[in-house]
Image (cartoon, rainbow, N blue to C red; front, side, top):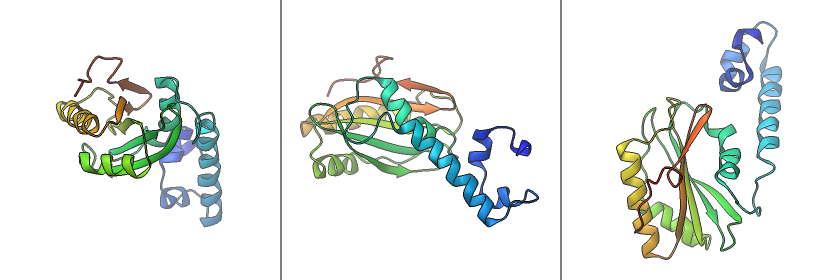
Length: 177
C-alpha cells in the first residue's frame, strides 16, 4: 500500500484505484474499504446519537473522519434536543468542488420533522482551507434568521478543511436573527 502514501490517501482511493494494485481484487478492495470504515466509526463512537454535545471538538470529532477528504462540498446539519443531545445527523446538500446549495426550508423541514430544539451546521471545504467564503457567511446568517423565526437555536456552523476547522461562533461570525 506504499503507493498511496498514507491511510487518508488509501481511504480516498476508489475501488478501481485499489484494484489497479497488483494482488488486490474485488474482495481485498472491499476488505480494505471495510477496515477503513471501521476505523472511522471507532473515532466517531465517542460522539453518537443520544450523546450530549459539549464542545466544538465533539462536533469536529463526529464529522472530520467523513468530511475532510471528500472531493465535493457536503452540507450537514446536526439536530439536537433541548439538552443538546444528538437526535440525528442529516445531509442537506452535496455540491461541487467549491459549493453546495443550501435552502433554509430544507433545514427547517428536517429540524421540525425531528422535533429538534437546536442545530449545528457543518460542511467541508475540499480545498482543505477551512476559512469561510462570503457565501458561507451569507447562508449562515440566512439560516440563523430562518431558524430563529421557528424557535430553533443555531449553536454553531463549523467548516472542516483538511486537518483544520473553523467555528463561526469562535470567530464571532454568527449574527443573531
